[in-house]
Length: 364
Image (cartoon, rainbow, N blue to C red; front, side, top):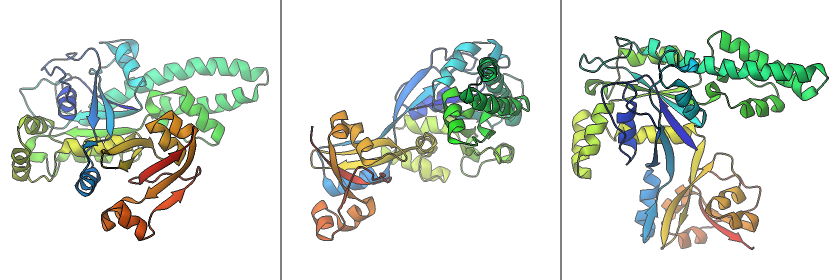
């Protein structure tokens, strides 16, 4: 599962990527400095993991991770191959969610590709290019589906009806995610189309340091614009975040944050938001050898969760022993949880909850 960082050139994408990951993308004051997409495997900050480490005192701790992809800047005409458009759009298509970075700060020393700071215009530039690419995809599929529908194929008739609604939305400059499936068949088809504008979006407003705590007028404009989009908006001072990551010690970083009036780096909140955007959640295994956060999809069953550790665990699943995270913290040890009758035994139908501490019994 990957979240791709997109936006116009010079809005702070690569600097943000560098803050989020250990990989160091080139960051320069000109378009197209990122040509091949950089992929970073990013640890998901989770205070629950630290608490479990404190209680269990394991030999090692392994956090959950999420893949972040730094995709080069899009420009007007990308859908027709302008700039490096086709390549970039292909990279976006391979991602499961989009982190859309918008420049929301004034600085005459940093070139804006369109000559002035206007996040509303910038958002619309990107949206239009993605919508045009989807329109091209939809029209090709529609042509094939109409031919199949003419000879009485029922599935094709459902596909035609859905594609026509999507096409209407795109022609009105609306993203495909605004089209609601009217049946499970339509929902399955919509997923199969793999349209770029159906992907969930997090808008990240890149602000200056003075706006890091409360945002600014540009952030307010973005919030107002996307209020009907079912998308999240957050803001952070990307340049300042870069300065924080350069500091050597935790204490230095905390002092820097306190001076700014922040409780934690904005990058940490962004990583958690990206994790949520990808509809991911965490369960834990906790023992003296290892305390580990495992990543699963929201809605996964106990056998599916077990399969993340090893496919044999899923194939031979017998049962799961489950402790709610809050119960583990309240009682302090697994033994005391058992004494209190708070350890549950769950079967194959159990839907794993975020934060569950689990042991699996299996037989292969």
